[in-house]
Length: 224
Ligand SMILES: O=P(O)(O)OC[C@H]1O[C@H](OP(=O)(O)OP(=O)(O)O)[C@H](O)[C@@H]1O
Ligand SMILES: O=c1cc[nH]c(=O)[nH]1
Ligand SMILES: [Mg+2]
Image (cartoon, rainbow, N blue to C red; front, side, top):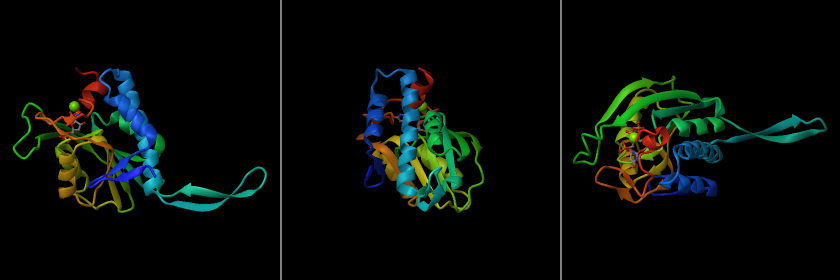
């Protein structure tokens, strides 16, 4: 069992996921190490999602020597992965190793950090580009974003994604989350499942997760 239930989220407790997250947190980790870490984390979390949320079906197969029993994962053709630009890009690269046939969506959504956090602990979010595949009732939608801080980005993204027919399952996958973000998403989208590798302590006055791992986009893209 590597998914532990938290009040609002399932936490991926797989030892390797926690190991990779520890490297991501390290301020000494280079841009390349950081990006590769997010790719690894995406793959590991993808495997955990398959283990915890996808049914298996048994059957038989002919090996060169004999007929034997098989176990196969069902539902892999009905997966949509949404990349929340830009920090999710390496996480999505890893997820695609677990879900190679997923249909993909892209949403550019970013916080206006100059405006700062509002009185309700939210950020204004600018959405510049939305390109989503058709989403149907049969789909498992996985929205990837390494950081869930105030939740302002994610509720904006969910408004876009869930405007039509609701999918069977909608999972928000983050590397690090903070209690205010988990609560905001749960309050506004109670049917959405939150999966994270860590629930951290709090946000600082600039809306950054503490202890967190800093600005994930800047560290992955080397923009500071
Ligand atoms: O929960 P929130 O308070 O909304 O914060 C989380 C968002 O902040 C970061 O994106 P950012 O706006 O920095 O854009 P970037 O990915 O381009 O760096 C992060 O990747 C999330 O999308
Ligand atoms: O801690 C945080 C919060 C939002 N976005 C990040 O990249 N890091
Ligand atoms: Mg950023």
